[in-house]
Image (cartoon, rainbow, N blue to C red; front, side, top):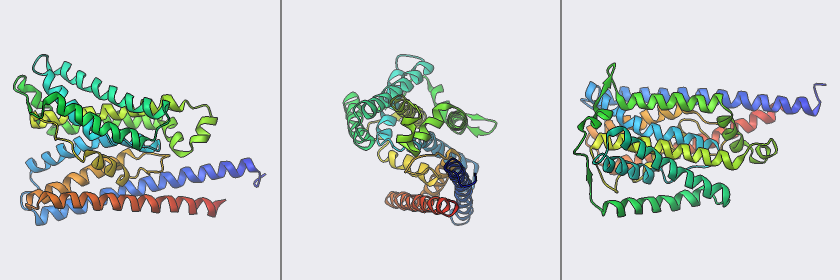
Length: 337
């Protein structure tokens, strides 16, 4: 009985689940520990870092990145990613800013979110129905959406002059916490429920874990793929609204390289590029780590080129951790088989 194929298969799946869960917790704690080390180090070497104003600004920056990173986590867990999020972010920011000249803030936000959803759904349809790689589709969409943003604005900036209360989405506080951080936490809670407690989240992870097995089990891969990329588009639009509220003036040059930040915080947070699972807690910690490093470098007056260097090193570090993670799981399964 103990050596039957059914028992061995169950034991393998149980071992994989336990190994994955253990690694997710360990990586979340590891990123949190690294964040604490950076915070303590920055407080010592960067005068003015550990102040309410700077910490608040750091939380705002981290929240904007984390919101899109949380959506990206779903795409990566499904075995793909979205390179167009930076362009979607800036276009939806432009939509929000432009609509504010004609409608009230709630309608402008709704228009921005619907724009992001539409762009995400287009990505999903092209990937699922035409069987095109996510890299090809989203890379092309990155250029197309950026081009649309340039055409719409004619290369000019869009300034938000009406509805100054729109700025409260960035400057407002609730219980002493910045509104962007509250928004990010709401997105985190909603997506955590979707990922862990709904068929949608389980199906996305199942597709990333084993696409063939997901097909055999009856999962509608096309529908799930479209929904996931629609979700990524919405999260990019939320960050676009947050960005427009932060700056109160937007142009088509914003968001360049934002896709790398979203991918970095997802992978560094513990979501494997091979798919199969997502670590939303780790994504939030990684976004806070990224924002903390950027804040410390700004206070130390380190030129922006080094910030790109830090981002690149973190991405390589995250990929190295991802490779080690997969090797550990494979070794664990072999030892228990």
